[in-house]
Length: 115
Image (cartoon, rainbow, N blue to C red; front, side, top):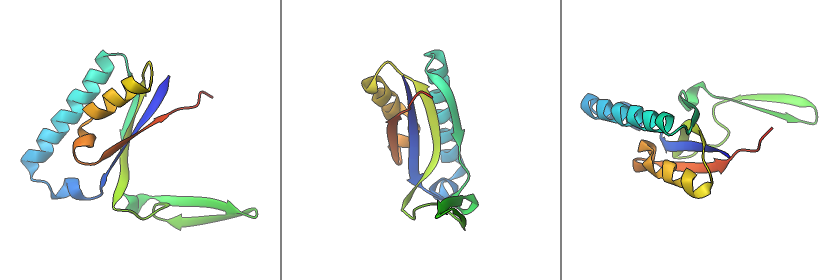
């Protein structure tokens, strides 16, 4: 079954970190991605641009509304994701706990409907 691991953290916090800490973080994410690939669990992953680049679209009574920015204002923003293959929720949670993002934010685990 596929699960989406969504990484939420304070937007802009990464840019305030010292360069050495950013390098350590990048190495941790690289190692995490490699562990997912080695286990055959990696389906896909991407880092998202900041919410300043977001556009929110809704349709009400047939009329399209387009707004700059994210759908909801909050302290933590969706910054990236991993789409993984796992046997069950427990295995997906185990991968989420190993994600570097869990140490500085939150990782939401959500099962994916097969289409």
